[in-house]
View (cartoon, protein in one colour):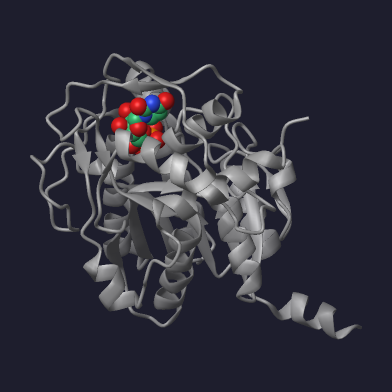
Length: 337
Ligand code: UDP
């Protein structure tokens, strides 16, 4: 047997739900770099088989308990990173049932399968959308959660399930509440690729590239400096660095914890558009449209806990780097064709 085979056989496996998606695929790359075997579990409803490059792919649905049990039996993961979810605010407001079924129902199935398999470490991707509007305060982990839409509400419900299963079944979880994740792998092997795209930075990139006539700004009458919503943008590579630290935290037996992941700095949609010019030298064609239902005015993170407890420091989370990395990835042609 070759030495590389030995490493492969003995390396701990981590089940990555949503590993074919944007954030999950970046997690797989970094897990592989950190010496784990990332096993992607994904129904490929929004993800891409071509994004699964760093470990095996199990094509399955979280609502299919037998498929989950089979994956746990085959790969014996030491932990789960749970990214698989529907995640669009607009769609969640139009079709809440789908969000509750997938995000809560699927997660509950997964968590029960973990307990049955005695796999008791989960890193869970939650969201700042669980906080809702809070009158301009910086949000820390103790801010009361008042989600405005079924996306945030279904993620908050999963947080509750994790807490209950912690008490009753000894399941340990690190819950990360993401602010706005952007950017791509600086090596441009993987990146964000949704069809259709709805998130601000990739939509802006499409407009900059001429693939859509203009970026439509959702609302210009919010009580902010330029009337557009404020968000806290974090680079996907920094976000995944925190996930590896979260996994190590669990493996060290440090118990369950919740962490915000953002930079603490808020940028309006207008600011983001302005940075496109400095990052890639293109002025983005844009126009104003109505507000989007379910949007909070401002979401800005207090992330001291992640810095203090996990030693997490955001390295690439400037708007210019996030936009430049997203642009480089877009120019590869992504997963289409
Ligand atoms: N946004 C926009 N036009 C777009 C997409 C997004 O004006 O085509 C705005 C959106 O209303 C919000 C911000 O950009 O204020 C970030 O939206 P995104 O969908 O990227 O992330 P979310 O905050 O919903 O998670």
